[in-house]
Image (cartoon, rainbow, N blue to C red; front, side):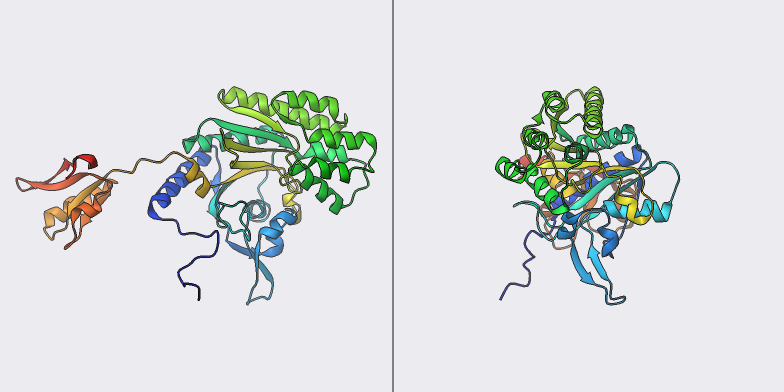
Length: 394
């Protein structure tokens, strides 16, 4: 019989040290989003399935836990992504003219982990901007994502840029069904040249050559040069390449140390994104720290097909990638009924200090992990004194 205390695979408790780091990051990132003008929303974890999966393609459907509502008999889902909920809020609850900026931070649930070490319960932070179709909104989302990672003290960032319109431009005019397109997208995402060759064997020569060229279009600025030579000169492709060049130029101006690359065969979220998209990594790591892009079609099911750009990241993963945070200093105090002592403790806590009282019958040393001062009685007054550094303590 399985032990009752065992959790499901890829589900874990967050213990105090990591929880402290995650909460610190949550506050920093929400403050950063507020600096850009984003307002916090808190959508429910549970929602009608049709609303949760609006405009997101089959990938999110497979990630979503589903259950039947015993009150209505309708299918419900536990959200696997908060973006559709933000689009619903923008379309139905706020329904504002002009630009709307929303941010959020809360758990999402996935039926399967995205990797061997990944959790099925990410703590998703994200920001979405609705109502502006121009690249200025895309650039704002890129910059906010980078600033959030800098707030987590993650430096030496690498950003890969891509655009869903490149593949759509290449496929334009080809009589392909949804299943065939999904196969091509998957093969490109895996950079599986053999499968791409097999899938495009009966295609027109120009389209087949363009698809095979896409497999190698990743790297630095030379990618855009090669793409203009190897891909068909169609309006969608031309505009996508110009937009990627514009974004790269402005990002380099704003962040001189940022490494900007391009991966035109990156098809992640192809059914979801409608324009430029990006992924940010730490130098020397293949783990994605943040991902986002333009998804103008998500709000269509809510009757308000607004331009939209955004990004999201997992605070649990980010807390592991970020440098360790210094423990906040605290004060060690004895426990006692003396009014002067209890008043001194209250005053310190009211000023924002952390005061740890040693409860009767317990050894103080066990509670001083983050204490650098102690409250002691001197000449009838309670005053603060420095505690010796831990390596100096007996």
